[in-house]
Image (tube, rainbow, N blue to C red; front, side, top):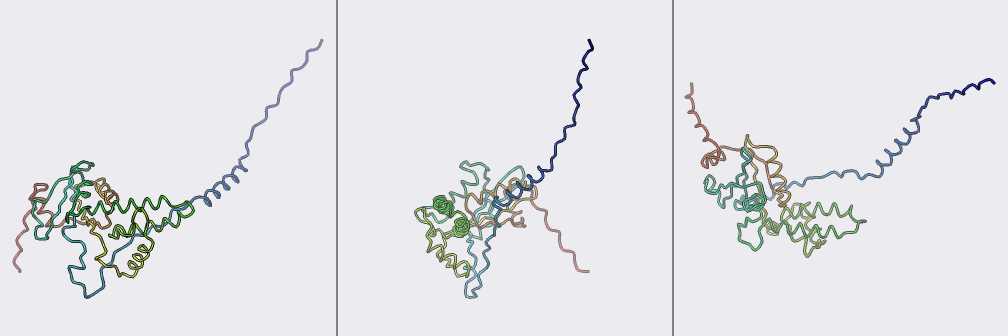
Amino acid sequence: MAKKKESKQKKMNVRVDFTPMVDMMMLLITFFMLCTSLAKPQAMHLTMPAKDQNLQAEDKDKSKTELTVTLYLAEDNKLYCYIIDKKEKFGDPEYLEELTWGKGENGLRSRLTKYNPYRASETPIQALVNARNQLDAWYNAQPKAQKELSDSIYDRAMTMIKKGHLDIVKSNQLQKARYEEVDRQMKEGTENPNDLSPTLSVNIKPLDNSTYDNLVTVLDEMQICCIGKYVISAINDKDLDLLSKKGIIEAPAATAAAQPAQ
């Protein structure tokens, strides 16, 4: 009896066609582009100098000495705070104190929060933080349908609070009439300085041997403490003399005597 020949299966090459996948990816990319909320542009509010020629020099300088805090960033993660109540006292090392980066009693945030130059019932930073918390409570209570409109109002209101317009919020509610009035005054430049609550101004002065991380930490504290007036400035000769008196840096070399004219 003849043997049956075993059938041989033909091997077929498997080929996956990814052409439809390209169309699917393009549809997904288009879908996410249309449905994703794009980042909104942010604007920084600038306070320009007063144009009224009748103002006195001391009235134009709203940053009073007792409301000005100078922070020195030194090497080895050292941080120093300098606060005086009169300009004539600048240079006295007695008022220069070392702070820590933590949240303890001698930390930067604690020092800024508890500083009360006018011995008021509420410190300037505490008043700002309280106003921000009330604004947050108002914002969180807004319905989702109004969130987009509330975002712009919230950002504008925070600018007002940092400037010292704390009366725009009360009992966890935004005072719409007062908000619109302050907004108009800010646009026209007709704000009344007497309506502003006292706010701190911070001079941030990093030394050449300080670190970038420490500078970023200080800037974060400015946002946490609602400090709207701060500036990063360079160390000058008076600062070097002050720091050398405290032994933080070496005394600057004496200036060479001027050469007689030829």
